[in-house]
Image 1: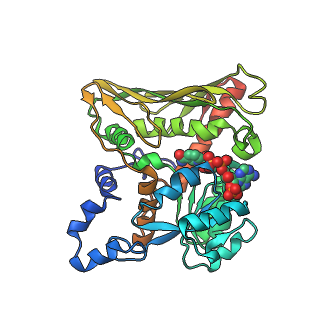
Image 2: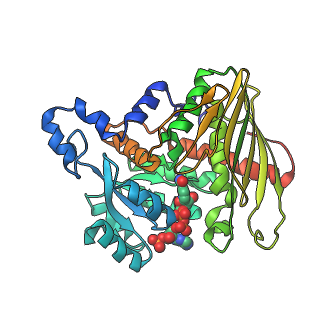
Image 3: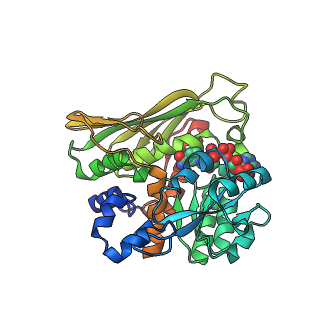
Amino acid sequence: MNTPPSIPSWQPSRRRFVQTLTLGTGALLLPSLPSALLGAAADKTKTPDGRRKLGVALVGLGGYARGQLAPALQETEWCRLAGIVTGTPSKAEEWKRRYDLAEGNVYSYDTFERIADNTDIDIVYVVVPNGLHAEFAVRAAKAGKHVICEKPMATTVEDCDRIMAACKAAKKKLSIGYRLHFEPHNLEVMRLAQAKDFGAIKRVEAHDGYVSGGGTWRHDPKLAGGPLMDLGVYCVQAGCYATGEEPIAITAREEKTDFERFAKVEETITWTMEFPSGAKAECLMSYNKNANKLRVEAENGWYELSPAYAYRGIAGRTSKGPMDLPQVNQQARQMDAFARNILDDTETIVPGDMGRRDVKIMLAIYESARTGKRVTL
Ligand code: NDP
């Protein structure tokens, strides 16, 4: 990875923030369109400016694809649900009916490569277990499709490199499923990291956890990479975007109370990330405690989001009062933004480099938890 600049290239600017807020709101876009395009915007296959909506194929029809991404793709304005890739034939039938998908746009994991010949599909969205992201993202790029890869990007830095190399070789764009970069409250935290309205940032607290019963791939280290990769990634992300910096050192500790349920994966990890400015992020991720919070303490005040990482209902307040920001469909904005990156040949604000950075940090957290030592990055 390149040496990070003081403000990373994916850092949101005020302009990006405003662009993001208008993305996905047809009401805001339509009045400025020529009247000839108004009819095109009403056509569900056309973008608001009259171009062909990009087709998205979801790979892995589990909870996130079914509960969040497919519904969001009914709201998107620059892309649409055009295909599916699944290992479960009964899901293929159900999804075909529910979303009126063409028979030719439905693939199994064995027939996936044939997607290369399908001109309806421009973007492949990889939503399988974490340990399979690299395999499917590389296959998608080799099939000549743009790729959205769910978080964590992969479970090793080498796999992140493989994904980025495959996309580069295919001349296709890659983005990571970091939906919170399209969510107004989290965007406000990113803006404040640059604007410093509350003075220099001293301390960040990022906690994310829920009580997991086990019995799924999330408790299988080979498929999941461990729960830190699943949940801790939100805290790693938050620490970086709340400070606008990248950590230089990590100190981590693992806590375990239920040795049966967490026989193969960690239960709770707490860690500190040290940043070049002297700011510190105190983080916690747990599969056995409920937590969902981001708090920033600065020289002249504080601000916090709670919940901070949820799909809906994110709420924020500052030492000056509540944050008055809209609730949005994060996934719709995330996918629309990537579709616009492709249509307009611009760069995503959630690139592979960022996914790779976070995997590197998480591996350092594991190393520190295992060795009990401070790990420098
Ligand atoms: P699920 O277990 O609900 O679904 C995963 C799906 O992957 C399965 O339903 C299956 O789909 C497919 N699959 C392929 N191979 C396997 C395998 N060996 N074992 C199990 N499933 C397999 O998981 P989620 O939908 O919750 O998570 C999927 C990905 O999305 C993960 O990477 C996760 O981190 C990410 N995610 C991101 C969120 C976000 O907010 N950005 C939120 C939730 C998840 P099929 O039957 O169609 O083959």
